[in-house]
Image (cartoon, rainbow, N blue to C red; front, side):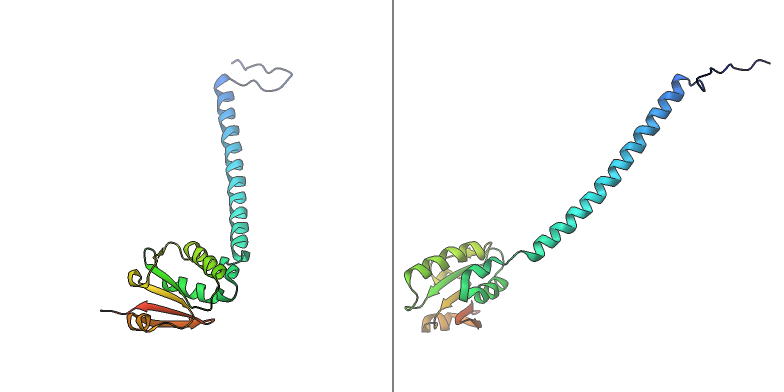
Length: 152
């Protein structure tokens, strides 16, 4: 019986054995990389949730009407139409700001120019008789009257 000779440098590997070792090493490397990537994704997701939790609400830029905008937004759904109505004591700059801000903050609800086309209204000041007849009060928040169209 003959035995295989071994070199002084160590064991002899065949081409097939080297291919298998290479595949095993590659799979191990990919598995370690995938585990590391999964840990990093979880860490970044946790940081994302922390960042979102500490982010300020854009309604705060509305100043004294921030609470009214928050409440009105909670009443509106996507595609609902709303109108913003201003009392005579509100200056032109404030009206313009609220008009721009409402379109941005209340999106995806749709801003309309008149209460006649709206499903809901936000009135800065006291609502007039026409608005009171067409809309039921939701709430008055920070001096802003919020209303929803009455059922016909």
